Image (cartoon, rainbow, N blue to C red; front, side, top):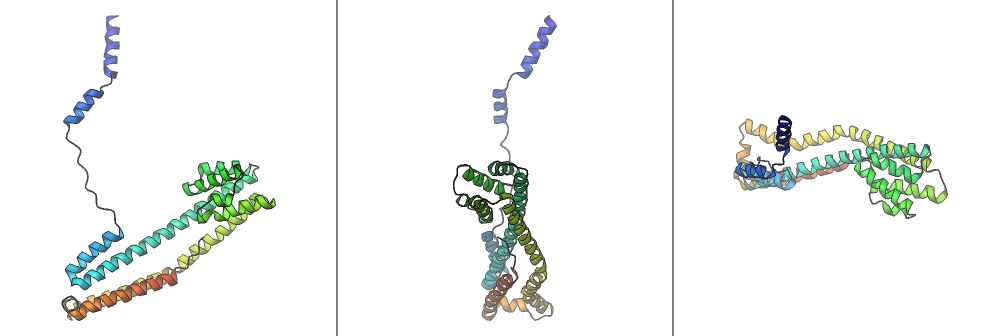
Length: 259
């Protein structure tokens, strides 16, 4: 019995909470060092860094040149990211609607089907499905329950089927086909515009290539641009024309049609 009691006592001491001792040991330890993290890139950061680099290399005109180039590059990258996000959301919406149509054709009640699909849908689609289901359950206006423009077609189709007694699965299936066609057309157009976009970028970089070629040939292009008033003025005018060309070519090639 003495050995058993000793083992039980040892186990109890081993499992005894040691919060006070842990706090004392933590206080004795030196505070953890924070890892150095670079600031997140932003348009303001790129403009400031570009302006500083341009000022060092080419003076005030170079500061304007590099700051404008950083801002335009950031806008271009953000536009590409928004387009990719939009396409992803439309794809997720299409898959969510396919699941809803499958639930409806299996005989589920529209409200129950919407709630069931919302459980496995992406965040954007789940929120819209829950809003539509809640409005339909309470007898409210489904079209006013959805504020995201991408989901207005769903709410309109839901209200139309309820108002005229149409099969909701067939109406939503038509919406799915429409979204599929829009997304397919958007991807095809975006792929076809890759060549013109690349040409626009190359044309925008040609003046810089000309300056570098002149410098290699011994014409001292950088000295003229950085040390003379005419060179500074040419830098500002040149970057203005390049930016105008980039924006105009972007407007011409931005032909992706999405809701």
